[in-house]
Length: 403
Image 1: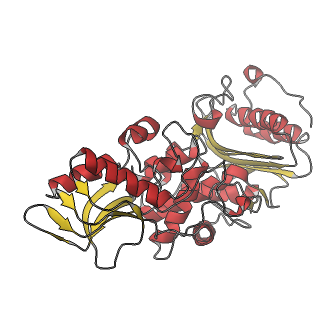
Image 2: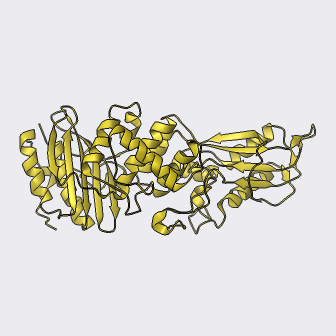
Image 3: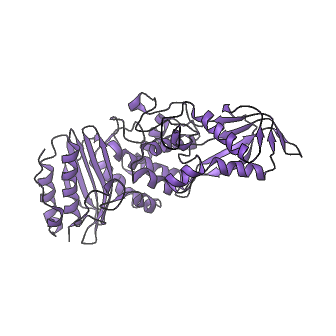
């Protein structure tokens, strides 16, 4: 792969008419398995085409599809709830004669107060649930705490890991606690996430002197169980940012399953991928195939043309502002923090990176020096990631330099 690059600081101001030649020169080193498409979002003019119709492996550019669909379905202020339910009666002396059920809906931030605050700033916690149950008048429980993950299937991973736990994701569950980590320091994974979460609620109740007779375990809440306490995730706008800026695979896969569960079915990867692809098709960003939410599967494919169509369609939707805000800022934050730290692209361009073995991608928006906005997608397959990123950065610097 060619690395005949110019320093970012030397990216000269240019007219839009000069841009195609500069981009074509950069893409000559990208290889035959790569493609790119750039469009002026304000005028609608296609500025650059380079093998732009053929579908390519998306890597983490898949998260553009996942987060856009989630924002549309849940709404930017939508949240995911974790509830405590019971069908037992509460006696005047505070005795609950029966069981408690900790029921998840796929909140990826749910866990301990310390972990949620340190990792995400906020999120639903077992400590808050225990406090709410105490305020509801519960002083003792004659049964046990069950953890209910039934909103999702019990597959712990995505297709790239044979649906088993992946070290790049962690264990998926409708009732995830601290990302499925066995300890807050990140050592190991939980063997049984719903039972683990139930045990943490049991401990939080004990710290408030609420006794629970039976040992915690996993189990499904009865249909007639009523809600006793509820905690909420951060807004979907915040969840999208936590997903896209650091390219968080766990959040993306949990979000995909939550899409399927919210639509009235069970939270499965396959159902979530179908819903995501359907949303993208409806607004013009038709993927060739989506297999998961994170992009770890090599089956996730779309053309640069379709990725740009998705980006352009999102600009016209109510969810655009948080979608745009969820993308990394060149030279400033997220996965683009160490890239384009000088030159016209810094602060002017936002994008979603993507990297798996032999694949590198960068798609997003640039507000050029001219004041006009460009949407771009550069999908590079059979590529060395280091060389691919250098080419991508050169191209984005050229887009941002347009006057």
